[in-house]
Image: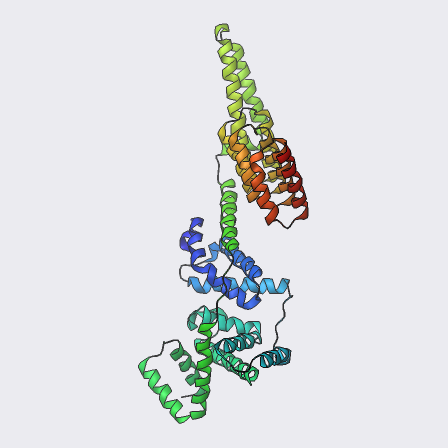
Length: 174
Length: 260
C-alpha cells in the first residue's frame, strides 16, 4: 500500500488480488446482491486511489481498508434504502412454516438453511460484526479498533450476537 | 472470573488464540457454572456450522471492470503529468505557436537561394505536418474534453498521419471517458479506414464499447467501409446486448454487409 501511496498505482492490482474476493463476500453478506456487491468492491478500490495519501505506515492496512469498505457500504445504504433489515422474527414465520412443512427430517443442508435464515434476521450491524470476525477472520483487536471500542467489548458483543442467532435458529428449528 | 470475561475467553478459544493459563481458568469457571457451559456448547455448534456456509463468488466482469478502472485512472494521471513550461504555453495558445512557426518557416524559405526552393517546399510541408502531429498528440492528452475534441478534429488536416496519430485516435476511441470525444475519434478514424489497423480497431471497438450511441455509430461506419469481416463480432454483440436500439442497428448492418 505504501508503494501505491508513493505513486506506484499499478501495485493496486496486487491488493485487488488479495482483497477483492474478501470484500465481495463482505458486501454480499450485507446486501445479498451480487451485482451491487461488485459495484461496492469497485468503489472501495476507487476510494483507495482517492484517499491513498491518508494511509499511514503506522496503521494497519487491513483495518484501514475494512474501515473504507464499511464506509462504502454505509454510503450505499444511505443512498439506496431499498433493502430493509428484519429485526422482527414474525417476518420469518412464513419462511419457518414453509421449511417445516417441506421437511420432516432435519439434515445438514437444512441446518445450514436455518442458519442462513437466522443470519438474515440479524440487523445489518450485527451481521457485519459476524462477517468480520467469523468469515473475514479479522482479529478481534483490529475489529475493536474499527469500532472504536475495547477488544473485550467486541468479544462480548460477538457473544451476544451469537446468542441471538442461536435463539433465532432454535426457534426456526422447533 | 466475571461472566463477560469467561465469554471473552471462550471467543479466544474458538479462534484457537487462548493461552494455557487462560484455558485453565475458563475450564474451572465452566465447571462451576454448568448452565453457562451448556449454553457455550450450543453456541460452539453454531459457530462451527458457519464453516459450511458456501461463500459467494463474484462474476468475471468484476475483474474486467477493475482493469478498466485502472487503465482509465492511469491514463487520466498521464494527462495531467507535468510538461515543460514552453510546451504548456504552446498547448494553451497552440494557434499562435503554429502561426509563428509557419511565418518563421515561410520567411526562412523566402530567404533561401532559388536552387534550394523545390527541396525546401517539401521540407516545409513535412515540418508543418510534423508540427501538427505533435500538437495533436499533445492536445489529445489534455484533461479538458474540449481540448481533446480539438485534437481529434485536427486530424482532418492530416490525411497522411503517421502511426502514432492513428494509435492515439484508436486509444481515444477505446479509453476516453467522454462520449463526445470518443464519437469525434470515431469520425476522424473513418478517414483512415483504408488502413488495416483502423479496420481492426473498429471491429474490436464493438467488443469494448458499451455506449449504445457509439455502438450504433461504429456499426454505421463498418457498413460504410463495407467491412464484411465485422459480421461475426456484430452477431456476438447482438446476442449479448440488451439494448433494443443496438440490436436493431446490428440486425440492419449485418443484413446490409451480407447482401453486399
